[in-house]
Image 1 (tube, rainbow, N blue to C red):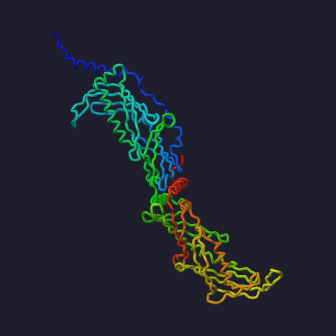
Image 2: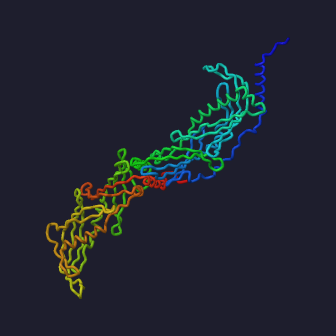
Image 3: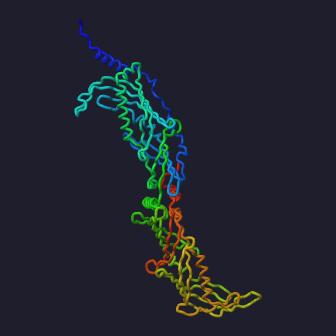
Length: 519
């Protein structure tokens, strides 16, 4: 009697042979099909709605290549100290790159090898579905679970169609994909035998383990432009959104708490990155403060007179910034003597007063002006009822005077006030006959005339856009000596920080090309 074959090993050997053959006899009828990704379909503006919006083109490295990714971000006020953040991650670049990135051999373990032909991934409503054809091979593993573990000969090969559903979640502000469902279907007429003998389940376990590792290690973390990153927006919800036909997108929403510290930090960033662009010149300042200066000019008699402002900004409380500024009028102070020589102060029927010499100096918190006046007196002749006419010159004299002035802020403008006018050395200025025929004290007439001139010559500093957008409220102004007698005005202002202020500043930076353009 011939030797009897043991039934179980015999059946196992036959099954192994059948499984090996089944890899060649399977068909692709169960393979998932995917729509061609429409890269031209625009992202709906509602997905990133905001008063200021950006499109941030970026990429991330994956298996030796750069994969494009675009973040659309909109910001809008959502409370007294909060901005709403609506974002949309356009992942169609990653979507089209995945077949090349994920296809190829994977050594899942010593005993199992996978050769993946990734079919694709697409959005289907609010979920993702992915598919791949996998050729799985079972190997003999020598010295398993030891340092000398090594792969032996191949025992079985089987093609399997893999269908997966994925969900998206947040890991901080990063997008993380997780497997929600995994379906495997061995191909071929005899593919069910692979399931029967547990091979399919081992393949499933290998794919799950590798997929979880790969997905956990490859988060998509959008990069925000630095001025926006300063606000530290936090995304709290995320959902899959379809773009065009099957295109993968991620809708994110969250918020950013804003305050005075944020705005000062944004201004400090501007100072470090403006590269001389704009009117502001930033000066090094202690942490938590911003210091800058800028120049402007005032037109007097057709000539532009330069002046400068040195300003410091620092938080006062959570929603308010204090600003201290020094208005340097040294350039105007130097040119005034030439410009005011010959300036007419009074021109009436009986008198004519002009400035022959003029100079100013600051003395602490006071402003002192000294001038030499040429005073001409005329005979004032009555020519009819209420009508007078200048007659002959009666007297010409030179009078030196001293004027004490102060300065104050009126609706953001510096207005100088004439406090007193005295003869220097002391003495009377005399009288001047007016057009009504009355004799009036020359001092009173000069005081009134100079006061009107000063009010009309209010200095209204024109703020550069980077400062004007903050809408500072000036509430203090007083003369201040700069150096030895230099004329200056110390000013104080406050800036209320609101979500609208932040949005306006970001819009300005965008217009300046310092932030990405709107979509």
